[in-house]
Amino acid sequence: MAIAKIGDKVKNVGFISTRIAGTDGVSLELEKWADAFNKFGWTSYYFAGELDRPPERSYPVEEAHFTHPEIRAIHDKAFGVTTRDRAISKKIYQLAIHLKDHLYEFVKKFDIDLIIPQNALTIPMNIPLGIALTEFIAETSIPTIAHHHDFYWERDRFMVNAVSDYLRMAFPPVLPSIEHVVINSVADDQLSLRTGISGHVIHNVMDFDNPPPPPDEYTFDVRQALGVENDELLVMQPTRVVQRKGIEHAVDLVHKLNLPNCKLIVSHAAGDEGMTYAHWLKRYAARHQVDLKFLDIQTRPPTENNPGFFHQYRALWELYERSDFVTFPSLTEGFGNALLEAIYFRKPLLVNRYDTFVKDIEPLDFDLVTIDGVLTRRHVETVRHLLSCPERLDQMTAHNYEIARQHFSYQQVRSRLQVILETARTTIPPARSEGARPSPKTIIPLKPLEKPLRGF
View 1 (tube, rainbow, N blue to C red):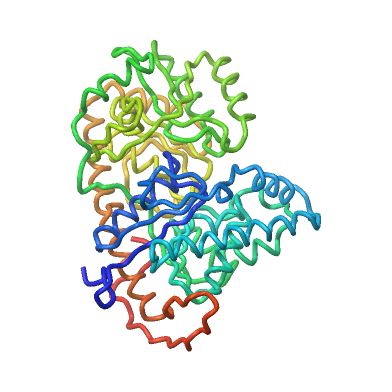
View 2: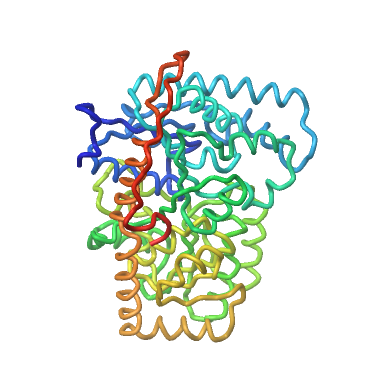
């Protein structure tokens, strides 16, 4: 595509986050953007505290990770209190300078033309990284697309804090060289209301133009590996073990179905936000006589043959393939990758009507089992009927797949990014070297778009 080059130079994009590894939503969605840039002819490079991308295109910095001891200590003293010790302010800026030095080196080493902070300017899990990025962008005017998945104001645990000055400065920053992208229209409304920023909406996507491959030997082995017999019902909860995922509703469903030999598998491990909820959930499942397991699985894209992962049969995609039913009763979500993944693998799905679902997904007329915070007898009977009626199940999953293909395919990301890149090229000054004087900024008025950027 013409957008791949400016002049005769192939472009390089740098993705920046706290963690670019594993099966969390940010890491998975980031790779879909990388695929889009690859289609444009760009090359992707990666900066984070934890990386599982190609080493030759990776720049790891320990202090970029939100679990680094110094970063965690800052986090613990910044939230849940209203006064900040002077030593914490000093430590924040020391680490910010350290991280900013690495950002300069990252951009120089890989000759980066565009950076894409992934949630690093959105949720304050790593305050020094957010400040470092903000100052780096302000000092260089490097073209930036800030991809926001979940803002701090969407999390109760960040409401009481001693770092409101840093939050206003960097989460997110208001700078002329940044284009802001959110993943749902609720977030877009709040971003404009709270900061005055006019953002773009790019929903999360799956590769619906290329269905998943047929089951392989690993897929057929996954149930045995999990201790699930072929005549047992496997209910999958494809989320991390955190309270806002509402996993107790999945436990209630399995309990009320009252089917023999039924197991509930949570695809991700506990620990990202502490173990309190996980311990409670285990006790809750035991009281309701539900066989509940937490996994910590590796993942590989369904179109990629990568024998390097250990125990590939435990990969996320294989677990979807061999599940009978998927539960997604989240109380809140930035968008809901698991919902699209379940539809991609043509699985029946129970979903709670969280805000983003109600505004951006439900109007598209998917055929789902939806609850409104309460699991009723009618919901349980609907699920029971689906599990016993293959014809109804096939009709439901085929209908959902076609709607998702129309609205949430990779092509949606490519077309919207192309618009944003063209916008950036006419409104953002070229990046300059450290210490150089800024050139005057010329803003060329844009022609009205034929189609709106927001929503689908």
